[in-house]
Picture 1 (cartoon, rainbow, N blue to C red):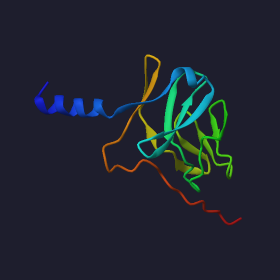
Picture 2: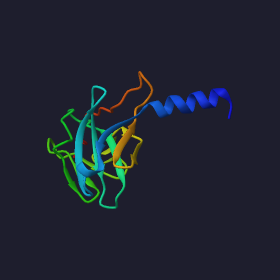
Picture 3: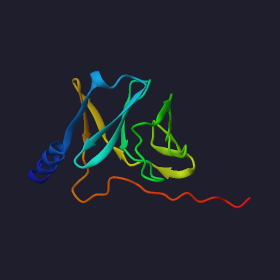
Length: 132
């Protein structure tokens, strides 16, 4: 591996941060955590997989920490926007999505990979109604 590749790998490894414990996030549960000045939503799917998304709804930036999680359906309690908890893609309305953080379990620690400095960490959408 070249020195440049080793440096890039080391810099990425330094951006992995522990944000929670597996003991605190059961399968089928979600948890909002503050990370580097941003709210991040952790989701532990019933399949055992972990996901990490922006912690605010892209509609009106309401916290997703009090959202309803029904299987793989994440529903914002503010205006009932719905997201696929496996992908972060919007289901209602379609076309929106949640910013996704790479996430991993390191023993009992849940870690996310912070994007490089200056990279936006959330999406924002305005609902538009189709004329009927």
